[in-house]
Image 1 (tube, rainbow, N blue to C red):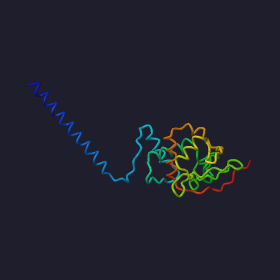
Image 2: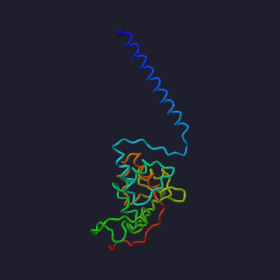
Image 3: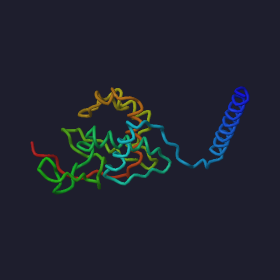
Image 4: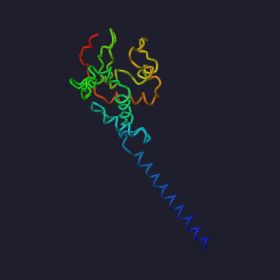
Length: 200
């Protein structure tokens, strides 16, 4: 009797595994038939999901996620807007009129000129426009050019980037730099503001 019960349990287990395997196989087939225009998302752990969600929510400009990976864009926004202070040099002026937190005000980012550069940092040194060009490339850069600038601190003509904290960015993971680049692809194009540099 014990052998019969054991046999029934084994048979039931094999049947359950077979059904589950069939369902899994079917799911795989359905996934391959999915429309090709659906976004693929970079898999992330729970430790990054909070950063991604906060990054998407904190972007001071509307994001265009068409054809982009929301997870990378969100993580890039978190790095740009919560960790790297890119706005301080690449938005002119960094804050909307009457919203400068360094003057005890609210701290509303200047979304009209967000990351469009034009900030005079020193004589002959003006921050770069990082918004997408007509081909969707941030500051006109491919990812390879962007990555090389972050790693070496040099522009294509060989001059060393001044004021840009590239020695810090050079230590970042490729995936983090890719996330920054993807965020910059998702923001709208903007033109530099015209705020005058502070008096010496």
